[in-house]
Image 1 (cartoon, one colour):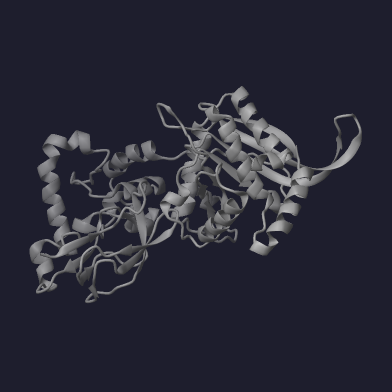
Image 2 (spheres, rainbow, N blue to C red):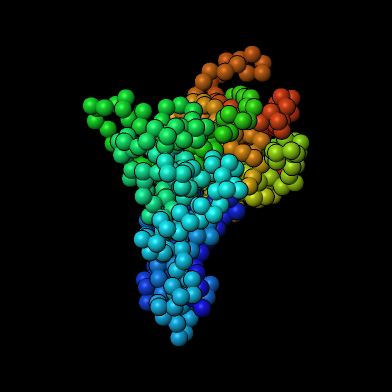
Length: 440
């Protein structure tokens, strides 16, 4: 019997992805472990391997298709002795039936379900002006609501005539202007309920009519960053702690170490010391080494530190696990490797998920100081500015010039209170101003 190849879940949180590229074509023979496609998640493009052996009988999802739900059939695999004719007879191609059959099937299915579930199903499955149920994916309904589209006026191209994302993305608001008042009224309620805060995309575009601009389509990463950080800023009670750190001792110590490590091809950066300082501080203040888990707090044993890495179109936060027990040279090598693979979007999910605390360093871009947004479920993030020569007053009152780096620690107040946060930041500062203690 033909076997359906399903859209894989390439990470624990993946709900949909983009089928970026097929590495096989219909008629190709594949074995278990062969690469058959490239799947783009919100964070990375990952290769997808065949689980079984056989012949690719039919490709159901075209290259470049976005918003493909996990477990959606994307292709059909034939065993020995089977042919493409077996796909329809066995139901293996049921996910992509002939379009002319869809309206009749959808209509009969809608009539069968309407009597007992009409009231309950209305928000999830809107009805057309003739009272028939409209089959549309949740994403398509949400986009239609945002764009003010009447789903009853849109022809679906998905299985059984189902309206999918591509159908509503291509539709124009003007196409629904002639629909019946009843249909407009029925669409108004779900549209109002689903309307996001702020003006819609069409409203913003109309503000700039007559002005030249380029419309940049959001990829999965940009959408995820926007959604997660909006949620974080709205739901996490942030507070901020700021300190200046004198770096002269660290810079001198770093220079001496790099001379000794030159023969091994190791060159430590200031960021390597910051990672180590944070990791050791989390061990010194263990109550701050925690994450928010909805109805509880998880106190972590090891120091798993996430570090923000800017890439084209977004950022990654690869996690350095057990950073408290690793040497500076080991941390430096691991960070370089993670940063390179992050920019190539080659990180595996376990390499950028987790961690209890994050670091965002914009000092190399000339930024003196800034406030970062906590990335849930982390309890905090350290925003690091550049080291700048400044006049400072010494302990005995003398005026001197020192290299000063400004840091701001953004904290989730649900996990860390003010005094605890102050203890953590004090420990970080102490490690950086007395770098030799980090080797003890």
